[in-house]
Length: 312
Image (cartoon, rainbow, N blue to C red; front, side, top):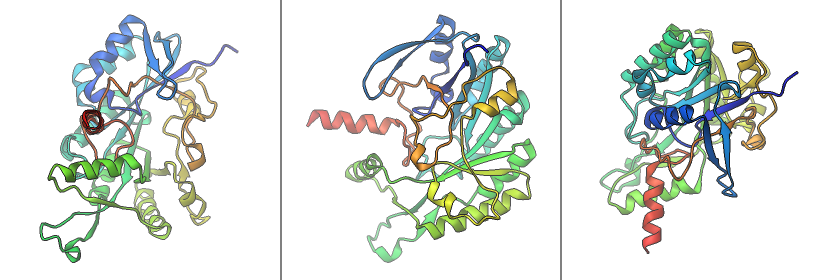
């Protein structure tokens, strides 16, 4: 058997379909991607021909630029297999200030499924957030704990109509850089929410509630990097550990010989089940302008904070 074909991730580090599709197509036309290892800064050229790439996995919160440019159709005509990880959360300008309205995102979900089939689309409701919005009075008694689950049932209804069969979710992680963002915004006189991290029992309650709602819609629920939650689920639960990039699924969908070995560059200790891929997003060159408060990737606000630190 020939060597496995690579899987391109575009991208965990930024939103390429929303902001960098022109750059992406230019790299396809030039025949290679230049990657930079974020830890050791080693550069490497990746052959971008469809003979070398089994599947391109796009990640986004706004697929409209990709859809309008018909880049997906062009890539497919040129022989590339495409898969889409589409994050559709409840609408919240507090948490996700730069993304389109929910109504527009649901329309995009339908467009993706119609043009490329629902089998190649993962719906990611990610992450589940709990937070306190600081009141103008400064009175802690006015600070109610809220969450971003309000539109989950509405999105699930649309996903069912579109034929989506997989929903992937996780809970907000307590990253140091998220705390820096919140402090930075407060220093600018803004009023960002303070993120709250629920205990295990609350997480289990929420996941089981989501599972029950999705079961009736024939949508399977997967949890991403939530090993502790998974280990404490009842044996009757059908919730599985997630792999947002799954080589075996890509092989079932498209045939061929994609890489199926586990990706140990991801958070495997936390339960990530993803198989190996090559991420072509570049932290220094591809800031994300959604500026989501909880993002683990590279929103533009992080660049602002770094630049401010350099000036001091």
